[in-house]
Length: 140
Image (cartoon, rainbow, N blue to C red):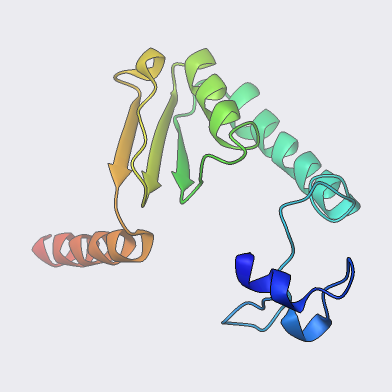
């Protein structure tokens, strides 16, 4: 951020000075809540699909076992994924919560025995799981 202040013209930053994603070239934006993030129609549509999923697989079929697998979710907005997953796990004995994240975190004490926390790189961990699955398939 400090490097960007040298490009400021009044209160504006020239477009060429705005950081871009190294993979796709898309302009990076600051962490904001606006009509494109957490407020817009895409978010609302996704939220409705998520609630339909919850009703179908957790609330309406309480006899089904469900794994809530949280992959690579940070701590910036826990109210979006992390806390709802914890709440769903706490309220339904057939739900198990598992989290895989690069950064260290903690397993919620109130979910002891019904949760798992793994620390590691997502790509490496999934590759190792695929390898284990392949080995197990050849043993049968």
